[in-house]
Length: 164
Image: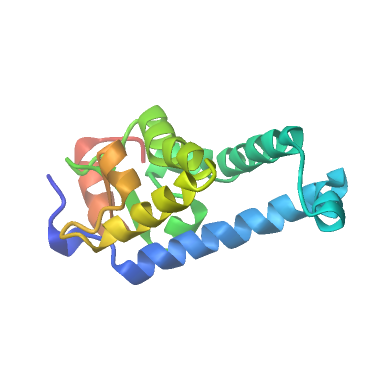
């Protein structure tokens, strides 16, 4: 069954989930940046090398997958989404395939956001899209997803017999 407007997660839940995910990532990544000396290099020189940027990009995505990969695959949630009781589903109300979910919803926007100047515009557009009628960010449109209240999606996913 397709999600209706009443099934959609609210702005506060979506923002809360994103903030929680960001804080958790920072708690994990900061000690790694400090331990590798990258943080000290940024403070000392005010810039980082291309190699360090590549390392940080890989570290960020690896950390994201370690923290959220299983939840995304099984339940269409990140840790933050689980805490605020929201879930990512496709436009039919099912948990999307992991590759589609991860690459189209997260990596494409992440890569575009890392491009100087263009990245700022892409990131802003991504967030502002949420104020459309169906509360879907740009990354939701790219992946064909929507974020719903977890209670709605749990009932629908169980009907379909999916991965929960």
